Structure formats: C-alpha cells, structure tokens
Length: 483
Image (cartoon, rainbow, N blue to C red; front, side, top):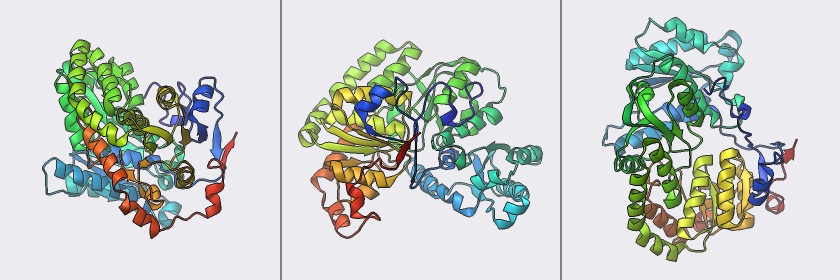
C-alpha cells in the first residue's frame, strides 16, 4: 500500500509513530511537532497485543470466507474473542442460528518447528475447502511459522487450481511490529495483492462510499451511520466486517472512501487513491456531536453535499440538545480516565465534552500526526491531562488510576473495576456508540455507573491486583527508557 509501504507502522515515512511514552499532554503537544518527543522503549513490558489479532478480527466475520491460522494452538486463542463478536453480530442481524466462524488451525508443534509446517498448512487449506466450500480462504501466519520459514505464499500458489476458492495469505506475524494496527494493514495489503490485484477501475457509482469499519462497531452503530449517510444521499459499501468477496471487489467502483476509525484503513485508502483515483476523507471517529459533525462534513465535501450535510447536522444536533442538557446535569464536572484503541480513545475524549466532563488521563496504543491534531484540540478543551502511550501495560494504568482517582473509567474495565472505580465501555460491539442519536445511550450508561457504583466496590473489596502497594507510589513511567 502507498507505494512501497511494508505494512509495519514504525517504518512509515510520512509520519513518526511512538508507542512508548508517558507524560503531560501539554508536553506532548509542544515537543512532537519539533521532533523532540524522544523515541523510547520499555525496560519492562506487560501484555502486548500482537498484530495477528487485529488481522484476524478484521476479516473473521466475512460471510463467504474460511480461515486457516498457521500457528501453534495458543496463537489461535485470539479467534475466540473475534468469534464471540461474530456470533453476537449474527444475532443482532436477525440470524439466531449463530454459527461459528469457519476456522482451521494447523497446530504447529515441536516436530514442525524442526522439519517445517508447510505440509500441515496445505492439509489445513484443503480441509477448510472440503469442509466449507468458501469463495475465499485466508491464511494467517504467526511468529512460529515465520521463524521456521514456512512459505505460505508458495503453498497458496501451488494450491491454486486445486480448489475453487481464492487463497489469500496474510503476513501478520506478531513480532514484526509493536503497533497492533499493523495487523489491519496486513489484511488490506493482502486484499490489494490477491483480490484487487491489477483489477481495472470500474465505472464509478456516484453515490457509493467505501466505508471501512473495524470489528468493534456494533450493528446498531452500523445502522446509525448508514442512516446518517443515506439521509444526505450517500450509499455505504460497508467493509470488511460482515462483508463478502463481492463487496470487496466492488471497492474500485466507489466515488470516495472513509473509515469509522482513523487507524483502521488509512494506508489502504491512500493506496486506493493512488491506484484508482478514489479520494478519501480522514478525520475522526464519529462519536459525539463535534466528532460526528467533522466526520460527516469531510465525507459530504467529496460528494458535493456540504450544504445538505450542514442542514442535516443542525437538525440532528437540535434533536439531541434536550438529552444533552439533562446529561450535563448528571455528569457535568465529573473527572474521566479513558483507554482503548487510538481512534476510539481520542474520539471518546472529545465526546465527554458533550456531557461537560473533565478529562484527567488517557492510555492510547500510539502517538502520531493524527494524535497530535486531537491532543491540540483536547488541550484547548480540558487544559492538559496525562497521556500514557502504551500497547496494553496494565501496570501503568492502575498506577495512574490510583493517583488520579477519576470519577469514572471508560475502557476495558477489569483493572479499574478491581480498584473500585465506576467503569463503562466505549469499545463495545454489543451496544451503540456512534453518531448523534446514540449519545443519549452512551451518556446514560456512564451516568448509571457513577450513580450506582456498588458492584465495582464489591469487586474491589473481594479481589486484588498483582502489584505491591509500593508500586502505586512509584512514577508510572519508571520503566520507559529514552533512547
């Protein structure tokens, strides 16, 4: 993608990307533009999310696909979460049979590490074909298969003609990148190489938008976003979640592209512009009135519908204003700590301003040019806050929570809940988050947690975290070492 892009986000030429940093948002905003933020590394790390997980999650719900995970059995454990999301998504879409994703694991063992696992991979692909007869079979590589040098591409090439399925290998071994969003890029690199290949530019469908959506978007959110776009005359080609080979092959026919999450398909959209001349909008995740307005106007400009969009935004904003006024009475002044994926974390930080809340800290996997834009805006709104740039690292999260003592924590709740803080989730495939009309649901959810904290207090009273009390007095960023 984007010329010679390798799929490893640390190597992108057009932006610096940091994944190990901690400090004040005011310091970050000042130093990053001058190139003085300082690349760093951790001398101790706890719980990294690897890129294979994101590659699997991005594609596992494709309706006409089967998946071969070329790894030891443990690496395929990430499929269980993606499969749960897939099953929930089916139910929300009215399919109560809720089948599992079509997954075959090669189960690389000690013998394969010595002698190679390509025969196992071939057998697994043939098994997936015989069992499911899919239109497309994705092969996910792993650290183990890469270390022993298995050639997934050659296996795929040798099987072409043997099976009717299109076979697509993905190079998503986890050790290649500390930035887990590289896994999304691996998925789109393979789509470019093996599905779109040298496909000519199709006749443009003037109302069609490529809408790239990560798997953490709920069906309710999908419907809301499609409703917003259709109200100004734009039709979404929603991919790759609950997508199909046919929808992917339709990508070159779109008039424009955008993504719900800023880090999900940014490199792929650049490739589509270079290859097919498809313009794209790259703004922010549509969470809250400010973000949804900015996101929709970015798209509308590409379709020549800016005036229609402005009128629509005014109507939608007025419709939710009474709900926001009520939520501000319940949430105004409450202090918030947020954690999640890069796009959703910064979107949530802007969202809470709709409720009159105060941001005191956040944990985000990366810091780059896009993050800088968001931090400058958030500094103006919240007056500075703590940033922990970390891929997981719960030991830093609990340290900061213990010091900052927010009124509510937004993000994956397990660690904060065990400290007794009210918690809620903005990364939730089971509940609505996006757009104008889902504001009330999300705000009420936050308010309910603050007003009813008993459950998490009981959890804190009967559980403990694996850290000594002395750790809570230490500098949370003690183990980040500047290079």
